[in-house]
Length: 224
Image (cartoon, rainbow, N blue to C red; front, side):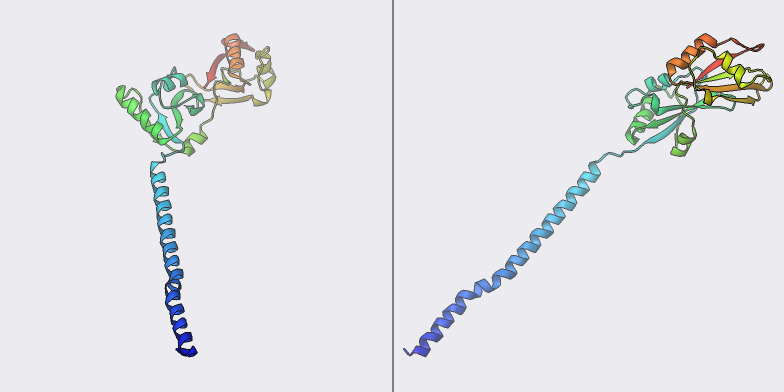
């Protein structure tokens, strides 16, 4: 066999050997692409499943309308036991003359609100609660048992007179507000004073209720 023939045969064997390797890159690319697509799809599916499994969060608000002047925050919390409420989740709404008219409730989640509705239905609908929004919650002043309302302040009384009436009590003197409100008994002058704590407000109520400012007997009311 001539040298040229041997070279041709050698070249042919080399070409046959190299043929599978020439397809290897494209096969590898396809496999990698499929693997990438499958992984992406699997990740997306997991994210969707996780999203569906995640419970709703964020505050949901309700308003209880049928309260009395003696209804307390504790009454509402105890009635809605199991809804994860604490006193900070409840605000009392007052009329212009500071009669309690309703209670605003901030539930920690929609599931807590649903649980409250079920509790109300289960206990005979003793509470009348409707859905409210955050704006209604925000405009309701939080007194939290740290504010005292004075009824019957004399028309000619000054802030100094009110401070003398509160002598011996620890309060925020800069918080004193005096105003007139119309009532069934005619216009009454009132005063609103804030205290550093519930205990100090209660001390003022116990020691000063039915006391006198100038010649008028003053009735105290703790605002919750």
